[in-house]
Figure 1 (cartoon, one colour):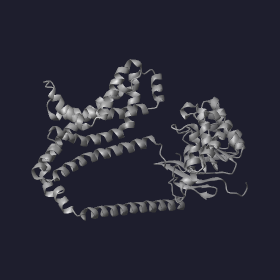
Figure 2 (tube, each protein chain N blue to C red):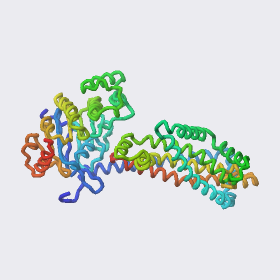
Figure 3 (cartoon, one colour):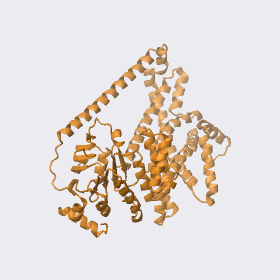
Figure 4 (cartoon, chains in turn yellow, brown):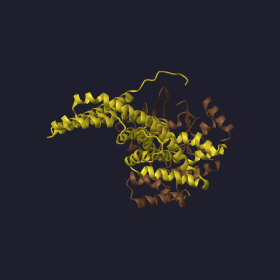
Length: 286
Length: 251
C-alpha cells in the first residue's frame, strides 16, 4: 500500500452498520425470548404431571445421587480406558479395511471380498449380539490362549462392530477425493501406495473428520454395553445400586456422566467442521 | 441512453479483508448495452469488485446501485438483487452432480418459476446458440474447459439478467478454447447485453469494450475508451502494466 491514510467511514456506512447492529440485537432478543418461553413451558408441563412427585423420588433423588456418584465414577474410569483402547484399535482396523476395499485390480479380489464380507457382517449384526457371541461364545471354546476377562472381550466386540462402520466412513472419504488428485500424484511418479499415503488419505481423513467424531461420540456411550458381559463399569455399578434400593437415580447419574463425556467430543466435532469450512471457503456471505 | 441512470453504478466502494484495504474507493458506471472492462494485475481487486457487485461480499463503504437503486443497503434482500445479475466465474463453478441441462434450468425453474418444459426449451435454444446442443445430457466433468465455460455462460444467461458479470472467464482456458468463449461474449455484446468484465485479454478488451478501467492497488487509476487507456495511457503505472502484457505477448 502506498500512503496509509486513516480510513474514515462515511455517514452512509455508519448508518448501514447501525442498522445491521440493530438487526443483530433484535434477532438475539427473539432467540433469547423464544428459548425462555420454551424452557418455561417444558418445566411447567413436567412438574405439573400427575406422577411428578413419584417420578422425582425414584429417578431424581439428588442426595442419593451424590451418594452413589463416587462408585459410578470409578466404573466410568473403566469405560474411559476401554474407550481409549477401542478408539485407537478401531481407527487402525477400519483404515486397513477401507484400504482393502478400495484396492484395484483383479488380483486383490479375494481381499476385497473378505473386507466386504467382514463389513457387511459386523455392520449388520446388532452390537448386543456381537457382545454375547464374543463375550460368552469365545470363552466357551476353552482355548487357553484366548483372553477371558470380560472387559477385554467386550472391547474386542466393540472394535469388531465399530471398525466396520468406520471403515465405510473412511472409504467414503477416500472415494470423495477427486480423481484428478490421484492422476496428479501418479503423474509425478508416485506409486499407488505413496499416492494413497501422501495425497489421498490426508485429504480423505480431513473430509471425514466430522463423521468420524460423530462415530466416536456414539462409541463413547456404547462402551457402556460391556456391562452386559459383567464388566463392572459405570452402568454395572449403577445397576448394582438399583438392585439394592429400587431407586433408579444411579442410572440417571450414570447417564448424565456419559453425556458429560460426550459434550467435549461433540464440541470438538463442531469446531473441526467449522474450521474445515472456513479454510475451504474463500470467504464471503453465501 | 443519455439521461437514464446507468444499469450499474459503483461509487467510492471500500472493502477491507482484515487490515488489508483491497478496494480503496472504486467508482465506475456501466450504462445500458455497454461493455465495461476492468483490467489490472492480479491482486488489484478485480475479483473482489465483482464479488461486491453480486453482494457475495459486504462492502465497507460506498454505494453500489443497480438501475439507480442502492443494493448495498442492508434492508435490500440480496437474493432479489442476485436474480437480476448473471455471473460467470473463472473456474466455471458448474454443479458437477447435475447434467448440463439441469445446471442451466435450475435457476429459471426454482428461482424464477418458469415451467420445466419452457425452461428446457430455452436451455436447448441457448445451447444451440453456443454450439453445444448435443451436450445437454452430459455431466460437466465430461466436457472440455471451453465447453464448460460456455455452459456456465448459458447458465448465467438463462435467467435473462439485467447485467452480466464476467470474472476472468478465460483465465483457466487454453488459447485455442479462449476464442470460442470470447466469440460468444462478443455476440452477446453486439446483441446489447450489459456487461462488466474483468479480463487479462487486452486484445479482446480493445475490440469489444466500450470503456476500460485500469485497477491498481484498489483504485481506478485510469479509465476511458479502450483506444486511449490501452493505446495511449496517461498514467505511468498503466504504461508499465501494458508494457509487461505486451512482453508476455498478450496484446
